[in-house]
Image 1 (cartoon, helix red, strand yellow):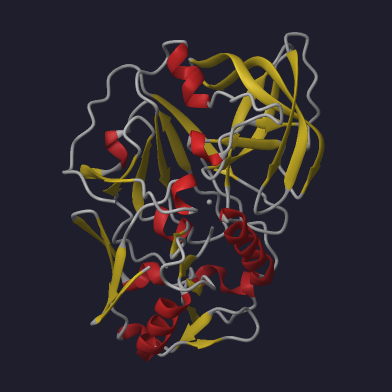
Image 2 (cartoon, one colour; image 1 turned 120 degrees about the vertical axis):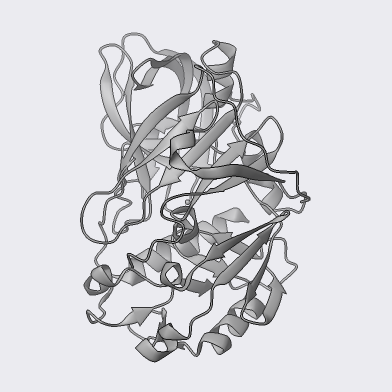
Length: 370
C-alpha cells in the first residue's frame, strides 16, 4: 500500500476530513498474540489520489474477463466494493444481479447496480463471485472505485434490502481465510516520496508490529457503533477528558483544552494550530487509553511533516499540530476520530468475528521523522 501526495493546499485536505466527519453521522480484553497460519493473505497498497488530497491509500484489483486492473480506494468506513468511476467495467464473466445500490462517502458518492464477478487482489488471493458495484454515475472519486473493508453494520445493502456479502464474507465462504479479520499497516509520510503499507486478510502480519496486539470491543454507542468505533480517553500533560480522516479530531471541549495546553494558535492560512520551536520542545506526549493499554502519540507524531510544509502554504521551519476540532460536544456519540496520523504509528486490526479492534506498536510508533 502506498500513499500519494496529491493536494495543493490544506484547505482541500480539511474539506475532505470535514465531509468524512459529516458522513459518520468498550470494554477491553486481555492482549493476545494472533497465530497466523497459511490462510492469511497480504495485499500491498499504493497511494490514493482523492482529488486534491493525499489522505488515502489504494489497492490494485484485477477484475473480470479479460482481466482489467483498477485502483480502488481502501475505505474502512463502508463495506461495499465497486468500480467504474474511472476505468470502465467491461467483462464477459460478470453477472448483473440487477440490485440497485447507492453509497455516499466523505469524498463523493456512487450509484449503480451490483454484479458478481471474479477479482484478484494479490498473488493467490482470488475471490470468485465477488459482489461488485458497477457505477452508472459517481461523484468525487478520482480513483477507479472503492474497496470497502468496513463492518457489515456500515451498510452493505442493496436498495432492494438484500444484504451484500463483504469481501471477508466471500474469502471465508470459499475457504481462503478462516477468520473475518483485516489488518492495516501504514508507513508515515515524511517527504514527496511514495511510501507504502499493506492489508492483511484473515489474520495479522507479525513482522509489521512489535509484541502483542491488544484488543478492545467496538462501542455500543451510535453512530460510532456503526463503524469501527471504540471507547477511549486521552490525557495531555495533566489534562484529562473523554473524547480513513487525515488529522486527529477531538470533541470541541477536548480540543480547546489541548489548544490552551500547547499554546497553539490557529494559522489563518491553513486552519492548523501553529506552535513555536520553544513550544514544540515543551510539547507533551498525547496518551490514548484504550481498554487496558496506553498508546503514546509522541510530540513528533503530533506535528505535520515539516518536509511537506510548502504543500500547505507554510514555511520550511514552521511547526503545525495535526489535532483538529471535531465540532461536537463530548458525549455526542462521536467524540474523536483517530485519523491517519494515528494509524501511521500503530498496527490496526479489525476483527469482525469478535466485534473488536486491535492495536499494536510498530517500528514507526516512536519515529521522529516529522
